[in-house]
Length: 285
View (cartoon, helix red, strand yellow):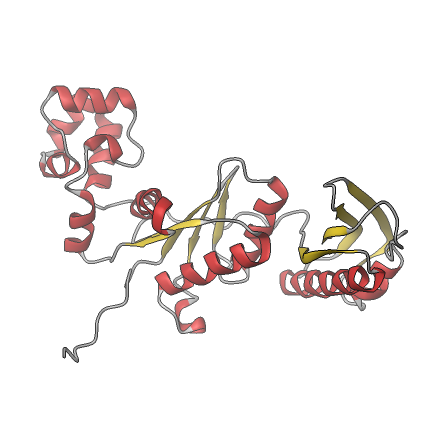
């Protein structure tokens, strides 16, 4: 039996590239942004369905390697929102993005940061799979006999620039060699935040709905305090069993994020929602 410790998957690769279904609900996408921000503050939204994050500062805090952090995010997204996120882990934005395309079946693909690991991931692939390449650029390279990413990586820079142009040729050759100078730039904190609870079974119990709303209010209050933001308006949406929705909203007399949020929810008109049109399926704030 081999007692030698194995290197963690994606070791040294801090970039996570997350793909949601292309038709993801914008509300759920915003919820995912908040979920990822709870793991690392370095998260960049690429609407409408992609997030890119740098977990360098989270590895030690959570005592998990990047692939394990990706799996944690993916599990939470499915458990909380029913959202099937696929994640690529890599040393650069482009490698992580290509890994996330490969993750459509398995859910997560991690590529290590060692040059030989990056080369093994990239070089055998058709040149058309290179991140950032366009169809015209692919066609020109193929006409010159450059069918794989590995061949493109081996060409002199001047040759690639003559074929594809100066800046484009240099950038694509670098990406083929696993070099990507882009950094993840944290997006501005959203002007709104949301959370939801989905009931395991449709319910007519006002107590169950109210308990869910209190839980949501506490979650959002904690999130606002962490972000040093203040709330101005609370909006509540309850989805009924027939998928119709009931909306309630209340503008607060003063911005608040310190007081007990449960009191604010109780003031929302109809927050108790006594039994009416049908069973409750989901509650969201």
